[in-house]
Image 1 (spheres, rainbow, N blue to C red):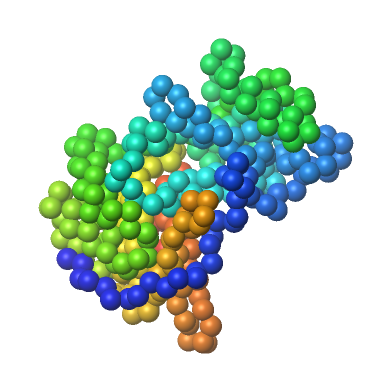
Image 2 (cartoon, helix red, strand yellow):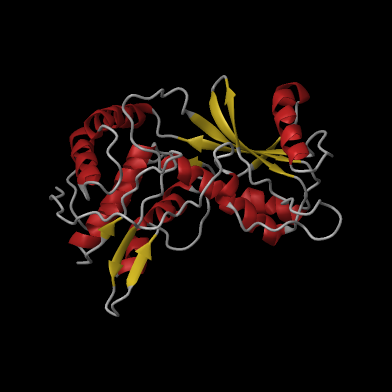
Length: 330
């Protein structure tokens, strides 16, 4: 069983999420995106639109993206993967809130509208990210097209009529008994945490989640790196090729547990970043830092690591959380 951790959180850890505009909260996630050279796009227009729209559908909400022109596979991958990960990470970093409308924040997936005829290499980038092409049905996309036409006009790009292709990446959640148990655990944790920000009580979220997992699934959890793989196993769906979604409170608790492992197993005096919302409500993702043996500070973007390792359907780097911990801290 996890013991209490007495490491103190520290304010002032630099936010991983750039400043964002109030009217378009996701616009600034990619401030360095470059427009395509030549006359195919007006000056300042990015091939991948930096605005992400949240669309409410009957079965839930989805994030929708737009690609105005195919910039080529390398630039396409760099821009689009960064925007997708930033979008998911922002949602996963939200404050745990008990008094919230669960239906309003229930997301089903991500969707890209490509307004250019993508070449085979760019399509392969999308498939590697887990996206699959779907047929375009004009009636289903009428309102979304109006929104994107407005975005294009405000950006100075007026040639949006209909997408050449539609690409979707669904979210996968644990189902059956596992899903029911996790839903109960989440509700109990939200009520107990009462909007506590990540890093306010280092190890507190992890300990609470571990207690619930032990009670619900008959586990006995310790402080070794292998327990990180156990957390991942019970918090995510056993699928491939989809985003293996978990709710913000479970995601943040898993990030918290990795700090406990760094402290308890590897003996590193990590400092938790206080993930407090700014005046616009934007919450920085979980992160740690510690003083290394050279007297300088090392920073670990743990939220991004957990996103890439546990949620994204991309096979890159270490094959498990335990391996990633050993690579990072061992």
